[in-house]
Length: 144
Image (tube, rainbow, N blue to C red):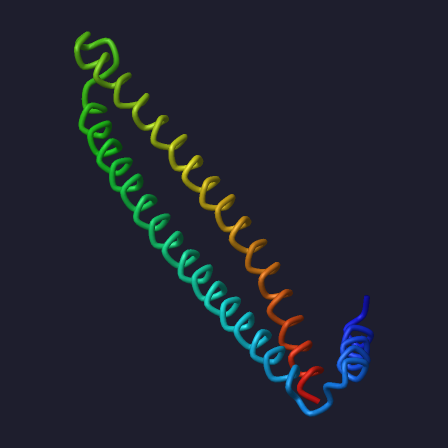
């Protein structure tokens, strides 16, 4: 049903009930106003959640990058010894390379998780924005 049809149906309902003086209109406008306020607060919460999620993602990514940088530094130190020179150094090199691969995998997982969270928050935001604008239009229609 279109917005104009809803407003005209509402106007007809008010006239049928003999309420043209605004006795019903005021509570309805108040309802729409309260609903819009709640939706606006929800929009603000979603935006705050998105900003918090961005901050957490940035912090996690920085931590992973710092760890990877340290592993690369350690691998650089070990690279002074040719493979096969000493068994314990070869084992350490393998361990560091595995840790570095694990960190790369973790970085991808962190990015994917961030992307999924942001998609969900954007979807939720779109739905609430749609409802918010619909309520605002209905309130304007009733206020006429």
